[in-house]
Image: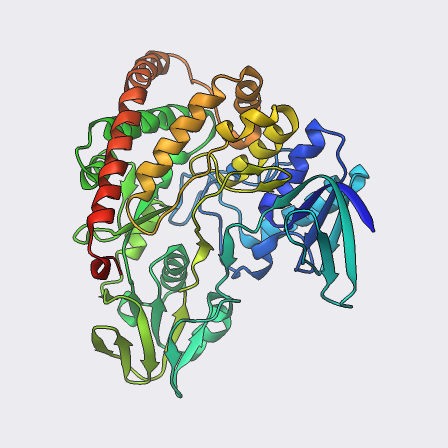
Length: 475
């Protein structure tokens, strides 16, 4: 029987970051188990041209920087902080494991193993190679990093039928297949599909040769508002003031998004189409310019069947051309579920607890686990409730404000957060910026309580409408 203090199920980003931070603040022994052959989770399945949505400095573990804080000098993200590629991230997590976690002498990594216990007290793992079952004694807690089920483009099962004579590939196979075709259909409206469109047009494909099937449009975060360090400090504070101002004064959910778009916080691909969802993806103005070049966009819901001459949707058919390459970007990425308490007895369920900050959230949960009394932990770690529609933004904003308020009552946590590298905080450049920051901070202090009250009202109004909606309409 293996014995450990913490058993971490999943050696993706969240599990590795939790382990890294826990090493700093405890003497705990840790066992990490993962179904894959190496660390890094879904990054092992990433398509070759994938990049982070956010600047690299916001990602990874607290003990090790990702990237060099380089400013892009070419391409659609010119002038913005670098976003690591999938290859860079895979190498980063391999080095974190081999050069930091394992050499500590307190971490054991068991790849190609699956957790088959009961998540309570009967902890067992099975080797996917030999089938051998191993029981574990966990002295402290089980850490579940699998709550957000990640569906990768290369591993998911498409939800549509493909008839003979049609070629469908995941983005992973696009670089090999692209030269065999002259027409392309991109399936899906999420960030993966945007990456594919940018990649195609960036490699000389004419926009007229691309057709884009977008089931639902999404509001997108302006990447210029989340730039870290000294250069972006004033803009980040200004962005917070803008978000709180919109949250405090919006009379409806639609008005909240309108205010944020006018303030330059949110963007949309087609200004004539009202987005129906928000999942926090980011985009630059340069990328937006590229995406808007594709004019042949089909907004008919999810495709049901692909034939050589037709695309079938629930509401009817759209013509298709033979000898077309279809790129399947319909994998859901993260599958959101109703939240559950982060801390439940001897189980920790890893979730996002600060707005848009997966890495920082994982590190914060580890720090709170190691340093805060059990009775206080969940008050500091309300998980972000992500939904399938526009209510996500106000619920995430309100939860983040509530967590921030509770963090302010714990001086040690406040100091840890302020100094942690994953916050990306810079400092005032001085001069006239100081006066602007002083005015913004006063504005933020005045807006915060008003924003919390109004966000609660918007959420309650949305929930009331959802409860009163007929069952057939909800479906």
